[in-house]
Length: 410
Ligand SMILES: [Zn+2]
Image (cartoon, rainbow, N blue to C red; front, side, top):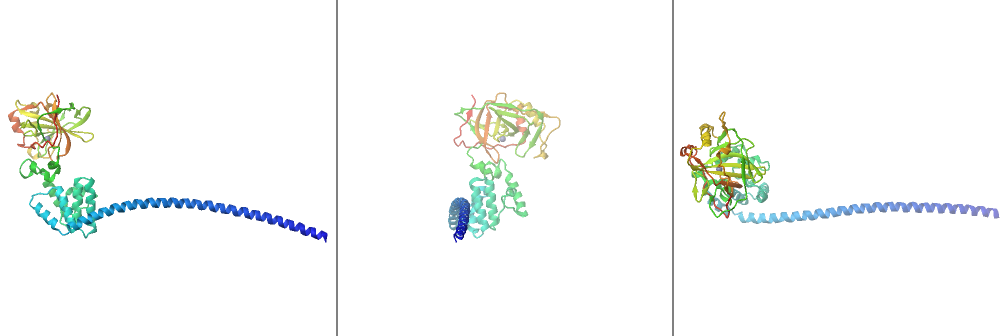
Protein backbone atom coordinates (compact mmCIF):
# COMPACT_ATOMS: atom_id res chain seq x y z
CA UNK A 1 0.00 0.00 0.00
CA UNK A 2 2.85 2.34 0.91
CA UNK A 3 4.57 1.53 -2.40
CA UNK A 4 1.46 2.58 -4.44
CA UNK A 5 1.16 5.76 -2.51
CA UNK A 6 4.70 6.71 -3.44
CA UNK A 7 4.13 5.99 -7.13
CA UNK A 8 0.95 8.08 -7.11
CA UNK A 9 2.77 10.94 -5.41
CA UNK A 10 5.64 10.76 -7.93
CA UNK A 11 3.14 10.78 -10.87
CA UNK A 12 1.32 13.73 -9.34
CA UNK A 13 4.61 15.60 -8.92
CA UNK A 14 5.56 15.01 -12.58
CA UNK A 15 2.10 16.15 -13.71
CA UNK A 16 2.43 19.26 -11.58
CA UNK A 17 5.83 20.01 -13.07
CA UNK A 18 4.53 19.55 -16.62
CA UNK A 19 1.57 21.78 -15.82
CA UNK A 20 3.84 24.45 -14.36
CA UNK A 21 6.09 24.41 -17.47
CA UNK A 22 3.08 24.49 -19.77
CA UNK A 23 1.55 27.40 -17.83
CA UNK A 24 4.83 29.31 -17.90
CA UNK A 25 5.17 28.78 -21.68
CA UNK A 26 1.60 29.79 -22.39
CA UNK A 27 1.99 32.86 -20.23
CA UNK A 28 5.27 33.91 -21.97
CA UNK A 29 3.94 33.34 -25.47
CA UNK A 30 0.74 35.27 -24.77
CA UNK A 31 2.60 38.31 -23.44
CA UNK A 32 4.90 38.37 -26.48
CA UNK A 33 1.93 38.28 -28.80
CA UNK A 34 0.24 41.08 -26.96
CA UNK A 35 3.32 43.29 -27.02
CA UNK A 36 3.76 42.69 -30.79
CA UNK A 37 0.13 43.60 -31.31
CA UNK A 38 0.54 46.69 -29.17
CA UNK A 39 3.57 48.05 -31.04
CA UNK A 40 1.84 47.44 -34.37
CA UNK A 41 -1.22 49.30 -33.17
CA UNK A 42 0.82 52.26 -31.97
CA UNK A 43 2.51 52.47 -35.38
CA UNK A 44 -0.88 52.50 -37.06
CA UNK A 45 -2.03 55.15 -34.64
CA UNK A 46 0.96 57.38 -35.55
CA UNK A 47 0.19 56.96 -39.24
CA UNK A 48 -3.43 57.86 -38.66
CA UNK A 49 -2.38 60.97 -36.71
CA UNK A 50 -0.11 62.09 -39.57
CA UNK A 51 -2.90 61.57 -42.09
CA UNK A 52 -5.26 63.55 -39.88
CA UNK A 53 -2.77 66.44 -39.58
CA UNK A 54 -2.33 66.47 -43.36
CA UNK A 55 -6.08 66.46 -43.90
CA UNK A 56 -6.51 69.37 -41.46
CA UNK A 57 -3.85 71.38 -43.31
CA UNK A 58 -5.51 70.64 -46.68
CA UNK A 59 -8.86 71.60 -45.28
CA UNK A 60 -7.50 74.97 -44.07
CA UNK A 61 -5.96 75.63 -47.49
CA UNK A 62 -9.24 74.79 -49.24
CA UNK A 63 -11.13 76.99 -46.81
CA UNK A 64 -8.90 79.95 -47.77
CA UNK A 65 -9.38 79.23 -51.47
CA UNK A 66 -13.13 78.99 -51.09
CA UNK A 67 -13.16 82.28 -49.14
CA UNK A 68 -11.20 84.02 -51.92
CA UNK A 69 -13.42 82.58 -54.66
CA UNK A 70 -16.54 83.55 -52.77
CA UNK A 71 -15.31 87.13 -52.53
CA UNK A 72 -14.66 87.23 -56.31
CA UNK A 73 -18.04 85.68 -57.00
CA UNK A 74 -19.82 88.21 -54.77
CA UNK A 75 -18.07 91.10 -56.51
CA UNK A 76 -18.83 89.65 -59.94
CA UNK A 77 -22.47 89.11 -59.03
CA UNK A 78 -22.75 92.69 -57.76
CA UNK A 79 -21.25 93.99 -61.03
CA UNK A 80 -23.46 91.76 -63.13
CA UNK A 81 -26.67 92.89 -61.48
CA UNK A 82 -25.60 96.55 -61.66
CA UNK A 83 -25.07 96.34 -65.42
CA UNK A 84 -27.65 93.73 -66.38
CA UNK A 85 -30.38 96.20 -67.38
CA UNK A 86 -28.23 97.38 -70.33
CA UNK A 87 -28.57 101.14 -69.76
CA UNK A 88 -24.86 101.57 -68.96
CA UNK A 89 -23.81 99.67 -72.06
CA UNK A 90 -26.15 101.67 -74.30
CA UNK A 91 -24.82 104.95 -72.90
CA UNK A 92 -21.17 104.03 -73.30
CA UNK A 93 -21.80 102.54 -76.74
CA UNK A 94 -23.46 105.77 -77.88
CA UNK A 95 -20.60 107.84 -76.44
CA UNK A 96 -17.93 105.82 -78.26
CA UNK A 97 -19.87 105.77 -81.54
CA UNK A 98 -19.16 109.49 -81.92
CA UNK A 99 -15.42 108.69 -82.19
CA UNK A 100 -13.66 107.35 -85.30
CA UNK A 101 -11.50 104.77 -83.58
CA UNK A 102 -11.65 103.25 -80.12
CA UNK A 103 -8.39 102.60 -78.31
CA UNK A 104 -7.45 99.29 -76.72
CA UNK A 105 -8.39 100.39 -73.18
CA UNK A 106 -11.86 101.45 -74.25
CA UNK A 107 -12.33 98.24 -76.24
CA UNK A 108 -11.64 96.24 -73.10
CA UNK A 109 -14.02 98.39 -71.09
CA UNK A 110 -16.75 98.12 -73.70
CA UNK A 111 -16.14 94.37 -73.98
CA UNK A 112 -16.51 93.94 -70.25
CA UNK A 113 -19.73 95.95 -70.27
CA UNK A 114 -21.19 93.85 -73.10
CA UNK A 115 -20.29 90.72 -71.21
CA UNK A 116 -21.91 91.94 -68.05
CA UNK A 117 -25.03 92.95 -69.93
CA UNK A 118 -25.47 90.08 -72.41
CA UNK A 119 -23.21 87.24 -71.52
CA UNK A 120 -24.31 86.35 -68.02
CA UNK A 121 -26.18 83.18 -68.99
CA UNK A 122 -23.20 81.47 -70.57
CA UNK A 123 -20.72 79.75 -68.20
CA UNK A 124 -17.96 79.95 -70.86
CA UNK A 125 -18.41 83.69 -71.04
CA UNK A 126 -18.11 84.04 -67.30
CA UNK A 127 -14.98 81.88 -67.29
CA UNK A 128 -13.49 83.98 -70.09
CA UNK A 129 -14.43 87.16 -68.28
CA UNK A 130 -12.79 85.90 -65.11
CA UNK A 131 -9.69 85.29 -67.19
CA UNK A 132 -9.85 88.87 -68.46
CA UNK A 133 -9.97 90.11 -64.88
CA UNK A 134 -7.02 87.90 -63.94
CA UNK A 135 -4.99 89.07 -66.92
CA UNK A 136 -5.82 92.71 -66.29
CA UNK A 137 -4.01 92.59 -62.98
CA UNK A 138 -0.65 91.45 -64.18
CA UNK A 139 -0.37 90.85 -67.89
CA UNK A 140 0.24 92.90 -71.01
CA UNK A 141 -2.37 95.14 -72.55
CA UNK A 142 -2.56 93.01 -75.69
CA UNK A 143 -3.37 89.83 -73.79
CA UNK A 144 -6.08 91.67 -71.91
CA UNK A 145 -7.61 92.88 -75.15
CA UNK A 146 -7.37 89.39 -76.65
CA UNK A 147 -9.02 87.77 -73.66
CA UNK A 148 -11.83 90.34 -73.67
CA UNK A 149 -12.39 90.00 -77.41
CA UNK A 150 -12.43 86.21 -77.27
CA UNK A 151 -14.77 86.35 -74.31
CA UNK A 152 -17.12 88.54 -76.37
CA UNK A 153 -16.95 86.05 -79.23
CA UNK A 154 -17.85 83.26 -76.80
CA UNK A 155 -20.84 85.35 -75.73
CA UNK A 156 -22.01 85.38 -79.35
CA UNK A 157 -21.15 89.03 -79.93
CA UNK A 158 -19.90 90.13 -83.35
CA UNK A 159 -16.30 90.99 -82.55
CA UNK A 160 -13.18 91.46 -84.60
CA UNK A 161 -10.34 89.77 -82.73
CA UNK A 162 -6.94 91.36 -83.28
CA UNK A 163 -4.61 89.30 -85.50
CA UNK A 164 -1.95 89.18 -82.78
CA UNK A 165 -4.32 87.40 -80.41
CA UNK A 166 -4.26 84.20 -82.44
CA UNK A 167 -0.52 83.77 -82.02
CA UNK A 168 -0.99 83.27 -78.30
CA UNK A 169 -2.12 79.72 -77.49
CA UNK A 170 -3.79 80.86 -74.28
CA UNK A 171 -6.49 82.70 -76.14
CA UNK A 172 -8.99 81.25 -78.61
CA UNK A 173 -8.78 81.04 -82.39
CA UNK A 174 -10.72 83.31 -84.69
CA UNK A 175 -12.34 81.79 -87.78
CA UNK A 176 -10.86 82.40 -91.26
CA UNK A 177 -13.17 85.29 -92.04
CA UNK A 178 -12.30 87.05 -88.79
CA UNK A 179 -8.59 86.40 -89.33
CA UNK A 180 -8.79 88.03 -92.76
CA UNK A 181 -10.54 91.05 -91.25
CA UNK A 182 -7.95 91.12 -88.46
CA UNK A 183 -5.12 91.29 -90.96
CA UNK A 184 -6.75 94.22 -92.73
CA UNK A 185 -7.37 95.92 -89.41
CA UNK A 186 -3.80 95.50 -88.16
CA UNK A 187 -2.42 96.73 -91.49
CA UNK A 188 -4.64 99.79 -91.22
CA UNK A 189 -3.51 100.27 -87.62
CA UNK A 190 0.08 100.12 -88.67
CA UNK A 191 -0.10 102.97 -91.19
CA UNK A 192 0.77 105.76 -88.79
CA UNK A 193 2.25 108.91 -90.24
CA UNK A 194 3.08 112.52 -89.51
CA UNK A 195 -0.05 114.39 -90.65
CA UNK A 196 -3.84 114.20 -90.90
CA UNK A 197 -5.79 111.24 -89.50
CA UNK A 198 -2.67 109.17 -88.90
CA UNK A 199 -0.54 112.00 -87.43
CA UNK A 200 1.06 112.09 -83.95
CA UNK A 201 -2.16 113.25 -82.18
CA UNK A 202 -3.83 110.01 -83.33
CA UNK A 203 -1.01 107.55 -82.53
CA UNK A 204 -2.45 107.02 -79.04
CA UNK A 205 -5.63 105.47 -80.51
CA UNK A 206 -3.71 102.35 -81.46
CA UNK A 207 -0.57 102.75 -79.35
CA UNK A 208 -1.74 103.87 -75.87
CA UNK A 209 1.76 104.70 -74.54
CA UNK A 210 2.07 107.46 -77.17
CA UNK A 211 -0.82 109.31 -75.50
CA UNK A 212 -0.61 108.20 -71.88
CA UNK A 213 3.15 107.88 -71.34
CA UNK A 214 4.65 110.33 -68.88
CA UNK A 215 8.22 110.15 -70.20
CA UNK A 216 7.84 110.72 -73.92
CA UNK A 217 10.36 111.95 -76.48
CA UNK A 218 11.32 114.34 -77.99
CA UNK A 219 11.79 117.19 -75.52
CA UNK A 220 12.51 120.90 -75.71
CA UNK A 221 16.05 121.26 -74.35
CA UNK A 222 15.77 124.11 -71.89
CA UNK A 223 17.53 124.90 -68.58
CA UNK A 224 18.12 124.85 -65.69
CA UNK A 225 20.13 121.66 -66.23
CA UNK A 226 21.33 119.01 -63.82
CA UNK A 227 24.83 117.58 -64.13
CA UNK A 228 25.09 114.62 -66.55
CA UNK A 229 26.76 111.55 -65.06
CA UNK A 230 27.45 109.61 -68.26
CA UNK A 231 30.44 109.65 -70.58
CA UNK A 232 29.91 108.41 -74.15
CA UNK A 233 32.53 106.71 -76.32
CA UNK A 234 31.77 105.19 -79.70
CA UNK A 235 33.45 102.36 -81.57
CA UNK A 236 31.60 102.09 -84.88
CA UNK A 237 32.93 99.75 -87.59
CA UNK A 238 33.34 100.42 -91.29
CA UNK A 239 31.38 97.98 -93.48
CA UNK A 240 29.38 97.53 -96.69
CA UNK A 241 26.68 100.24 -96.87
CA UNK A 242 23.16 98.90 -96.24
CA UNK A 243 20.10 101.17 -96.32
CA UNK A 244 16.36 100.84 -95.89
CA UNK A 245 13.42 103.12 -96.70
CA UNK A 246 10.85 101.93 -94.10
CA UNK A 247 8.16 104.37 -95.28
CA UNK A 248 8.78 106.73 -92.34
CA UNK A 249 12.47 107.54 -92.77
CA UNK A 250 15.74 106.40 -94.35
CA UNK A 251 17.71 103.96 -92.19
CA UNK A 252 21.40 103.11 -92.39
CA UNK A 253 22.10 99.59 -91.09
CA UNK A 254 25.54 99.39 -89.50
CA UNK A 255 28.25 96.74 -89.58
CA UNK A 256 27.88 94.21 -86.72
CA UNK A 257 30.08 94.97 -83.73
CA UNK A 258 29.52 98.74 -83.89
CA UNK A 259 29.12 99.84 -80.26
CA UNK A 260 28.73 102.84 -77.97
CA UNK A 261 29.87 102.82 -74.34
CA UNK A 262 27.76 104.69 -71.78
CA UNK A 263 30.29 104.80 -68.96
CA UNK A 264 31.17 101.05 -68.85
CA UNK A 265 27.89 99.75 -70.31
CA UNK A 266 28.16 98.46 -73.90
CA UNK A 267 25.35 99.32 -76.34
CA UNK A 268 25.14 97.85 -79.87
CA UNK A 269 24.31 100.27 -82.69
CA UNK A 270 21.07 98.96 -84.29
CA UNK A 271 20.36 101.58 -86.95
CA UNK A 272 20.82 105.21 -87.91
CA UNK A 273 17.94 107.33 -89.25
CA UNK A 274 16.92 110.90 -90.04
CA UNK A 275 14.10 113.33 -89.21
CA UNK A 276 13.16 116.59 -90.94
CA UNK A 277 12.93 118.97 -89.11
CA UNK A 278 14.72 117.90 -85.93
CA UNK A 279 12.29 116.42 -83.36
CA UNK A 280 14.20 117.94 -80.45
CA UNK A 281 14.01 121.66 -79.84
CA UNK A 282 16.74 123.72 -78.21
CA UNK A 283 15.27 126.74 -76.41
CA UNK A 284 12.05 126.19 -78.35
CA UNK A 285 13.66 126.00 -81.80
CA UNK A 286 13.96 123.04 -84.20
CA UNK A 287 17.03 122.44 -86.35
CA UNK A 288 16.52 121.73 -90.08
CA UNK A 289 17.18 117.99 -89.49
CA UNK A 290 18.46 115.50 -86.90
CA UNK A 291 20.27 112.16 -87.07
CA UNK A 292 19.20 109.46 -84.57
CA UNK A 293 21.63 106.65 -83.76
CA UNK A 294 19.63 103.91 -82.00
CA UNK A 295 21.45 101.58 -79.57
CA UNK A 296 20.50 98.70 -77.29
CA UNK A 297 22.47 96.93 -74.55
CA UNK A 298 22.39 93.23 -73.55
CA UNK A 299 19.62 93.89 -71.00
CA UNK A 300 17.41 95.45 -73.70
CA UNK A 301 17.85 99.05 -72.48
CA UNK A 302 17.80 101.51 -75.36
CA UNK A 303 19.89 104.64 -75.90
CA UNK A 304 19.31 107.09 -78.74
CA UNK A 305 22.06 109.54 -79.67
CA UNK A 306 20.81 112.62 -81.54
CA UNK A 307 23.04 114.77 -83.76
CA UNK A 308 21.37 118.03 -84.79
CA UNK A 309 21.93 119.25 -88.33
CA UNK A 310 22.44 122.90 -89.26
CA UNK A 311 22.38 124.40 -92.73
CA UNK A 312 25.95 125.13 -93.83
CA UNK A 313 28.74 123.42 -95.74
CA UNK A 314 28.19 120.32 -97.83
CA UNK A 315 28.72 117.13 -95.78
CA UNK A 316 30.83 114.42 -97.51
CA UNK A 317 29.36 111.49 -95.49
CA UNK A 318 25.79 112.55 -96.35
CA UNK A 319 26.87 113.08 -99.98
CA UNK A 320 27.84 109.39 -100.10
CA UNK A 321 24.54 108.30 -98.46
CA UNK A 322 22.28 110.46 -100.64
CA UNK A 323 24.10 109.23 -103.77
CA UNK A 324 23.09 105.68 -102.78
CA UNK A 325 19.50 106.13 -101.56
CA UNK A 326 17.27 103.05 -102.04
CA UNK A 327 15.31 103.26 -105.34
CA UNK A 328 11.68 104.45 -104.96
CA UNK A 329 10.21 100.97 -105.62
CA UNK A 330 12.37 99.39 -102.89
CA UNK A 331 10.37 100.56 -99.85
CA UNK A 332 10.68 98.09 -96.98
CA UNK A 333 13.52 96.19 -98.65
CA UNK A 334 17.13 96.32 -97.48
CA UNK A 335 19.25 97.93 -100.19
CA UNK A 336 23.02 97.39 -100.51
CA UNK A 337 24.65 99.25 -103.40
CA UNK A 338 27.70 97.30 -104.62
CA UNK A 339 31.20 98.31 -103.51
CA UNK A 340 30.19 101.16 -101.20
CA UNK A 341 31.61 101.20 -97.67
CA UNK A 342 30.50 103.44 -94.83
CA UNK A 343 31.30 104.13 -91.17
CA UNK A 344 28.52 105.82 -89.12
CA UNK A 345 31.12 107.67 -87.01
CA UNK A 346 31.50 109.96 -90.05
CA UNK A 347 28.14 111.46 -88.99
CA UNK A 348 29.24 112.42 -85.46
CA UNK A 349 30.76 115.65 -84.17
CA UNK A 350 34.23 115.06 -82.66
CA UNK A 351 33.15 116.26 -79.22
CA UNK A 352 30.37 114.11 -77.69
CA UNK A 353 29.35 116.49 -74.88
CA UNK A 354 25.57 116.35 -74.62
CA UNK A 355 22.19 117.00 -73.02
CA UNK A 356 20.46 113.91 -71.66
CA UNK A 357 16.99 112.90 -70.45
CA UNK A 358 14.91 109.77 -69.99
CA UNK A 359 12.36 109.47 -72.77
CA UNK A 360 10.86 107.06 -75.27
CA UNK A 361 10.96 105.94 -78.86
CA UNK A 362 9.62 108.95 -80.80
CA UNK A 363 7.65 106.69 -83.16
CA UNK A 364 4.85 104.17 -82.34
CA UNK A 365 4.68 102.20 -80.08
CA UNK A 366 6.45 105.06 -78.17
CA UNK A 367 8.04 102.58 -75.73
CA UNK A 368 9.51 104.31 -72.67
CA UNK A 369 12.71 103.67 -70.73
CA UNK A 370 14.87 105.02 -73.56
CA UNK A 371 17.90 107.23 -72.70
CA UNK A 372 18.25 110.22 -75.02
CA UNK A 373 21.61 111.87 -75.60
CA UNK A 374 21.37 115.06 -77.67
CA UNK A 375 24.81 116.24 -78.83
CA UNK A 376 25.65 119.85 -78.00
CA UNK A 377 27.69 120.11 -81.20
CA UNK A 378 25.77 119.89 -84.47
CA UNK A 379 27.02 118.99 -87.96
CA UNK A 380 26.46 120.89 -91.22
CA UNK A 381 24.55 119.88 -94.34
CA UNK A 382 24.19 122.13 -97.37
CA UNK A 383 20.73 123.50 -98.23
CA UNK A 384 20.72 121.19 -101.29
CA UNK A 385 21.50 118.17 -99.11
CA UNK A 386 18.69 119.01 -96.67
CA UNK A 387 16.26 119.32 -99.58
CA UNK A 388 17.37 116.02 -101.07
CA UNK A 389 16.20 114.02 -98.01
CA UNK A 390 13.17 112.07 -99.37
CA UNK A 391 10.77 112.88 -96.46
CA UNK A 392 9.48 116.45 -96.25
CA UNK A 393 8.18 116.24 -92.67
CA UNK A 394 8.74 113.22 -90.41
CA UNK A 395 9.14 114.69 -86.92
CA UNK A 396 7.08 114.15 -83.77
CA UNK A 397 6.47 117.40 -81.84
CA UNK A 398 8.07 117.96 -78.40
CA UNK A 399 6.32 116.26 -75.45
CA UNK A 400 5.40 117.34 -71.90
CA UNK A 401 8.16 117.36 -69.28
CA UNK A 402 5.91 115.80 -66.59
CA UNK A 403 8.46 116.76 -63.95
CA UNK A 404 11.50 115.43 -65.83
CA UNK A 405 14.84 117.21 -65.59
CA UNK A 406 17.37 117.50 -68.41
CA UNK A 407 21.04 117.04 -67.53
CA UNK A 408 24.09 118.34 -69.41
CA UNK A 409 27.78 117.53 -69.52
CA UNK A 410 30.03 120.40 -68.40
ZN1 LIG B 1 14.21 109.02 -84.55
